[in-house]
Length: 487
Image (cartoon, rainbow, N blue to C red; front, side, top):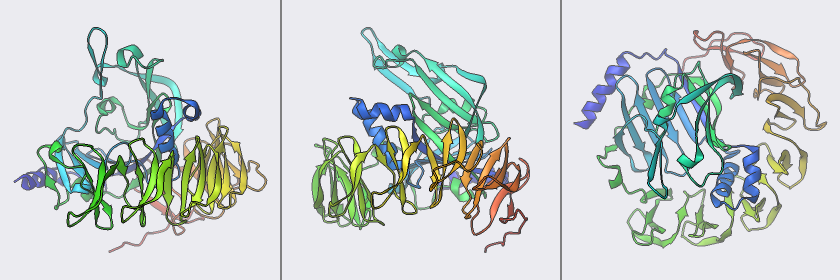
């Protein structure tokens, strides 16, 4: 019955929505300000240090922590790896129906589209309940910022820290940077975003938040907003067991109801490893990251045997290169699977490697290092946004520049936004709210005339000439091309 009702609800809305309608995809990453990262190095608060470690781990991973698909009729939000199990929320704006999907359990529940984030804490005299619905949103005029290549305006929620949380030492200011050309976006505990006239591309406070790393216009796909046929409706979310979760290799994590520690069993319910860890990640190859009850990191194999003991502040696996990122005394290094040190733990952060290089930070500045531990580019830059074998893109005083790695000199003037274009010498650039393409030495290759432009893939880029027109395609010479239809 429920399946039929769901199909009926969604079918009505899809009759009024055509594939020609725009659909935007926004990728969000965990974002910590440089000041917050600096504080994390010396802070006694372990939660801040944990956030810094998460930001470091997520920094160069291609997988966003939050992905959203939005248009005027639908919202889909996928959350991954931020203090919770992977979840998907789909919302029909027309009918106000919303569902939360749990892929690991092939289950779903009916929910509301968004709730007011509530904080409850006890004072000497009473229990204080704060809801964001009670807080006015203040729109800040004459303030702008470019995020993911799009101009954003600022809205803030402000309230006294004593009213919110007596442990805070400064008043709370939640910043919301939003773009008015995108449909509004709300989910989970973000009901206050309903009052924002556009999609929020940054949400944060105290230098901690999520920020859009990419915004794309994509083809409309109705399946994104449908519940898979093999999912089962759960009336009560608390009836779901979140600790019978697949780890790969036909192994599953399960939790002891008394100790709350986690073990592993196979698909025949045979215990492979008795509960002993506070957390177990999915297997990457034949290895999985685990933490003990003291939040120390280690690595196990598919037999549940510790191949690296739980004595580390932080560990992360790169199975392709067969290396392990580790932290000790607040510094990050790299070792191989035999625990032989490749790069000593002397840097504040080292990102995952790409194109044979990785970002590393030292004393609040960023540079490039190779797999041998050789510094290719000293840590002289405030922020390196992107790089290839010969050039980097930096952001300095909210302006983007191309820098030659060999000479360490800027090769372009400052732009509102720059993005490597996947062609040897081309860069996507934003100037005076128009997109175009420049060479790495700053020459205009394709004029600034587009409302939006993407990098090239197989020599083809997608562009919008106006907000209202369909997506067009160009080659590296700026000539229009026709895309072949795929069956």
